Image 1 (cartoon, helix red, strand yellow):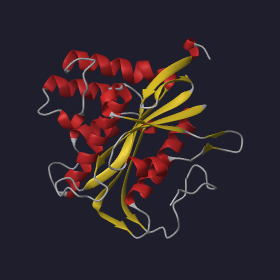
Image 2 (cartoon, rainbow, N blue to C red; image 1 turned 120 degrees about the horizontal axis):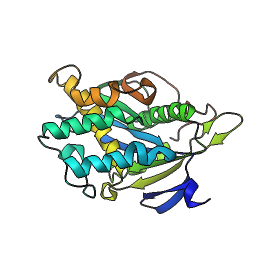
Image 3 (spheres, rainbow, N blue to C red; image 1 turned 45 degrees about the horizontal axis):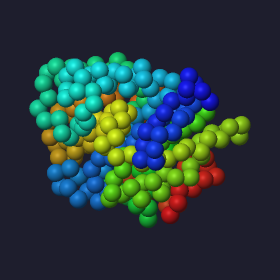
Image 4 (cartoon, helix red, strand yellow; image 1 turned 120 degrees about the vertical axis):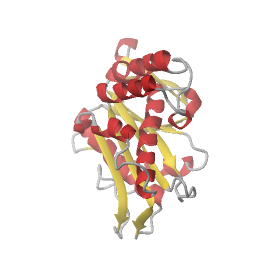
Amino acid sequence: MTAEDSYSIIHDSGKIDYPLSTLLVGIDETGHETFADANHPVFGLGGCAVMLRDYEQLIKGPWQYMKQQYFSGADRPLHAAELNKPTKDQMRALGYFFTHFQFFRFAVMAADTLENNTHFSLIQLVCNEIWGRIAEIAKYAQPTQIVVVIEQSERIKRDVYGYLAGYKIGNDEIMIEPRLFLATKDRKQAFMEVADFVMHAAGTQVRNRILKRGIAIRKDFEVVFHKVDPHLTSYTELLKVNNATQPENPADPKRRAAD
């Protein structure tokens, strides 16, 4: 594999080259899995995905340009929760990025109003749904490999990594076992920062609905999930779960999530 047909991804395991036909997935979290914060009683996982052949054009290049022009600089970290009182120009720049660049974005959310009538943890249920979203993206994008980079959370990284590990996506002719890695926010990878903004929009949308704050659809949520090709977006909120059996990987009925 030459430099012309591969791309290097940086994560906490180092830098590894992957073919351009790889689907790159960045996953971040929002909220707390026990709804510990009364002012933010939500939990969810999600983020963004893009084929490596399109990463520079659709995410990295535009994101770094936007940061250089409107924020603290291309090489400085940018996190949604730390963006206090953004200017109109900054809001317009973020809106332009999320509506004009056609990468995948997805989220699976829950709030403290969830009726979980199973013996499975919320993290397990959300992780199971996340694989459903990734499977749908893979069906549309047709990658040869899948690399999933998870934002490293000291609190839940073992659970999230464990429930996401071991899944396979494909059919009788080709089966892909995604590779999972962890990455801290200080890596400043563009796709992980984008995943952070996706999940901030999803989390605050659910919080506002639960706490009955503001309008029905927040502007940032609308920009991220509603003003782009519907094939590129997937948003799910778990309201009631009654499945009495162990959750299955929707991409591979023979594979079941680990207890």
